[in-house]
Length: 122
Image (cartoon, rainbow, N blue to C red; front, side, top):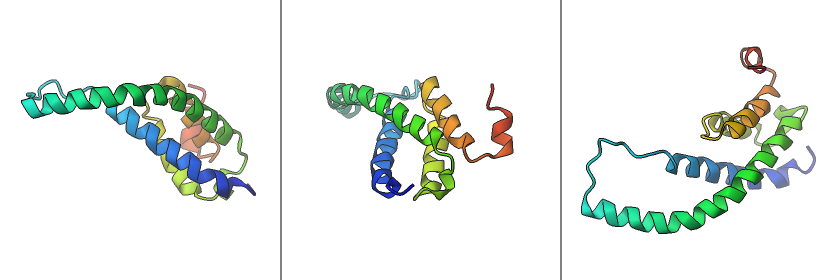
C-alpha cells in the first residue's frame, strides 16, 4: 500500500485506454446509413486504429497483469483511489474478452460483497 499512490495513475490511464478501445471495437449499428463524410472518417480511423490495435494487444496483456496484481491485494479499500479502482474493475466486467471479465470479477471479489461472492465460482 505504501507505493500504491505512485502506481495508481498508471493503472487509471491504462484502464481508461482499454475501456475506450473496447468501446471502439463494438460494431456500429447496422441500421445506420453511411454518408460520404462518415466513409472518409472511417478510413482515417481504420488507418489510425491499426497502430492502436497493435498497441492495444500489448495493453491487454498489461491490463491482465494489473488485474492479477489487484486481485492479490488483501485490503483494496486501503489503496489510494480505491473507489476509482472499484469503478474501473466494474466497467471492465463488460470488456469483450472473457479473460479480462474474469480478472475484473476477481478484483471486485476482494471487496468481499456477498452478492458478488455468491456467483464467483460460476
